[in-house]
Length: 430
Image (cartoon, rainbow, N blue to C red; front, top):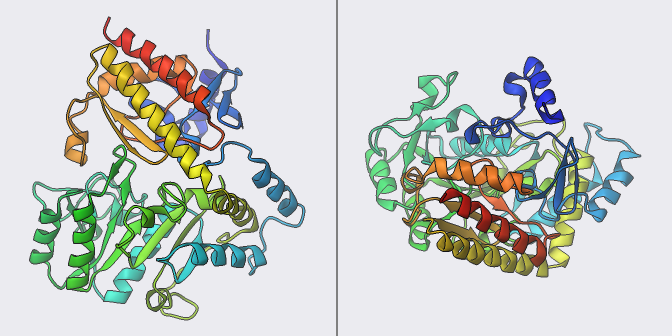
């Protein structure tokens, strides 16, 4: 008998491409159809048939405080009574920008936008204008949104010009994106040697989250700053995922000696509403219109709803630093528990973790870059994912995505998840 979710998915596919408004939601990577979610409460989500799941997706990262946090919801109720958008300056977007500039050592000025994709796209355009160059370097396995310059895969070698990874990306645009290997500084150096006066920007996720959780190694991070300084290239940190997630100051807490020129934000700074931002050094940010020649605009940029939800979220995180300690301890408990559960069933796994971000790979090898990730056993993950979902644990439907813990979780939620993982591993060995 068809479930309500299955019926809704069939209806949705008739009017929305693939039935979803973002591909990861389709669950095609785990060879099943997605549950349709109707509400969230704290650390749980509920599908259309009222099945309850512990939510380790958290809307793919924004909900660090859990679903329907009272302060965020109360703030939204206050705003919505006065208007949702004006297309004019408001006090809350000013206060939000002040909070970010005051909190983040790498930010002198910040521009609000509506998505992480918009933030990274705008940051790269700004870097190209600042350097008067056209090429950028990105890293295999890093995801920076779906603008044309980022949908590029590596060629046969590190020096190969970009090849489009999606139809609709002209080769003329793709050729300006060069792809290096994450945590491999030599691959970056080789690209610079081949294009010494052409590279406008290097963009990197300080902690990759779309090929599983993989942090930059210290020497790699230091090397990126040194080589970009040497060649007069803008260093961009994509902290759409890690900003205010791996610590209140984001990646700065992991790499305090590395100061990027531009940093991109999203997810948490909107408290669950659509948002993005990019900021950096004043001399670079001052190139933006209306005070500079680089045009960037957005009708709903800095809208009161997203700004208020984000402001309440950041205030709560700033005023309660113990939240990060809690997330770190819970994630460590989960990491140890998953390792032990897999060992009991002789299942080979590697678990990567940074703060409250965690991912596991079905492999016995260390995972440091996309090449390592590609060797993980995806069929085992699919079987594991289905068992966990059926047990009431909602994981990202890919072993190449991060799990996100939230502040409403406690030891009971983690121990329940470990218990269900233990049961799932046993079934994988039958």
